Image 1 (tube, rainbow, N blue to C red):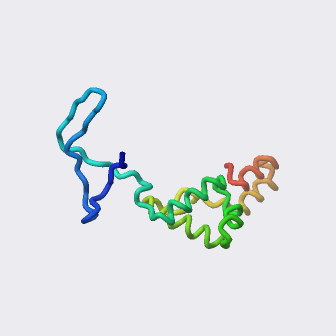
Image 2: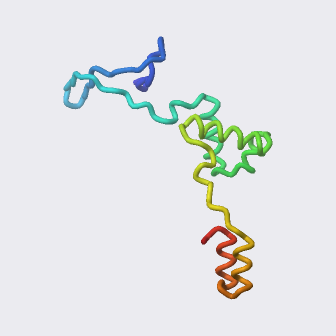
Image 3: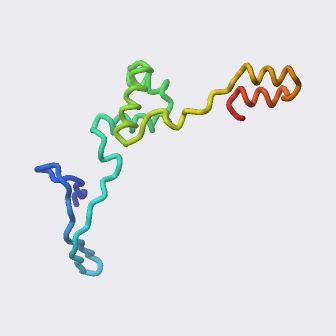
Length: 126
């Protein structure tokens, strides 16, 4: 059995399924059923291969460097391409409010923060 295509092989347009058949019950259901395109269907074959290598290496880009023989910046760039192809913007969730280091150190010196609290704030743990 072939997998259901998500796009028309001739035009690249939307596919609408008009019949569903269950062989166990020997029942057919006619209608208009939209085929939901899974996010990974948007990826090129090269991007899918990259994702497979990424998963095999447990997301560790430095291990991918050895596996692919590419530099870290090249691998990161390819990862960003995959992220964009999936409809996200790379690094968007990473943006955390900047810690005012001078303020934290001043509070530590003034005694209003303990050493552990200051370290936690400087590490980004608030």
